[in-house]
Amino acid sequence: MIIAELAQAHDGSLGTAHAYIDALAETGVDAVKFQTHIALAESSVYEPFRVKFSKQDATRFDYWKRMEFSLYQWKELKAHCDEKGLEFISSPFSNLAVDWLEEIDVKRYKIGSGEVSNWLMLEKIAKTGKPIILSSGMSSWEEIDSTVNFIKGYGNELSILQCTTAYPTRPEQWGLNVIVELKNRYQIPVGFSDHSGDIFACLAAATLGAELFEFHVVFDKRQFGPDTPASITIDQTREMVKGIRQIQTSLTHPIYKDRIESFQELKKIFEKSLAINRPLKKGEILTSACLEAKKPKGYGIPAKDFELVLGKKLSRDLNQWDFLNWDDLEQG
Ligand SMILES: C=C(OP(=O)(O)O)C(=O)O
Image 1 (cartoon, rainbow, N blue to C red):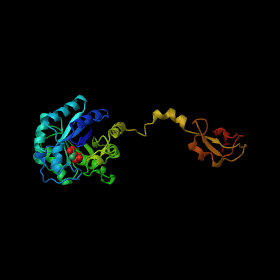
Image 2 (image 1 turned 120 degrees about the horizontal axis):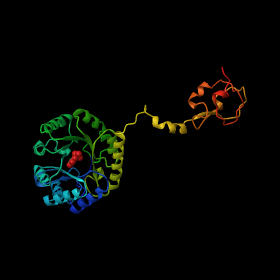
Image 3 (image 1 turned 120 degrees about the vertical axis):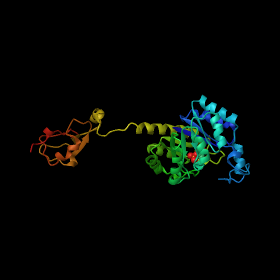
Image 4 (image 1 turned 90 degrees about the vertical axis):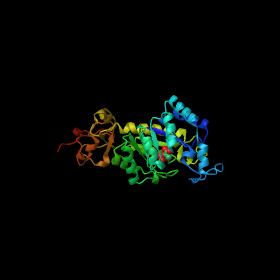
């Protein structure tokens, strides 16, 4: 499942949010993801800024307020995704947001890294019985274990994402090793929530068997917004989706090196036969300095057997570039 995360890339503009849906529908992603922020329900004027990026928003609370859409607007965004054949996903940050997302009938829930310990909200989500994707950005194994067990207690379908909460993440922060550890530890589908700002981390995660991919998208890397440095563009999205799908096709079609029957005809073209690289007279002794290997296979002694002819005498004269066969050699 490939999820394009818009988060606040719309900067509070409903029109821009709709424009993203249209643009992402052309990229091959499975889902478009939003964040449903309701400032009064999830935050307070005491919340500090992660990055003070805007003079317009005096507080982080003011910023969240500016990022809000109404329930009606969320319904329209969901309808637009439905129309484009994209799943609408939105992570809630309050119980009220869960109520809204239930009202617009979302198919599944994504839990952002900051909500892993918000069991009040997790219980409400778990009780919907819907599938849950849990992120793990700032959590220890102990914290993830307890939240996974908490959700498992309700029986929801659960998948988990490796995520490092940094914007953007440097390669040494991607934590690709965790993908394999999560798989072994929980035996549930594992994915990668990417903040690298480029296409490589998700592609690498795909090779390690990640099954879900979430990454931030912006129209332009010069765009205003706290997540912009951690985001990729629409064109990069298209390219990355192609790469992820190809890697997954490859991983589901293993090649067995002991089953090479289909290459027999090609081997005849590519493999080589021994030849000599200068005119030689009957009786001359062969050394590797007078040998060459030429295409195709089957016109002389296989190149692989060159050691068997070293030190042997020629039974007749040969011209430069003639293939070398067993009857060109004196017996014994
Ligand atoms: C913050 C979120 O996710 P993550 O922690 O995976 O970046 C989110 O989904 O809203």
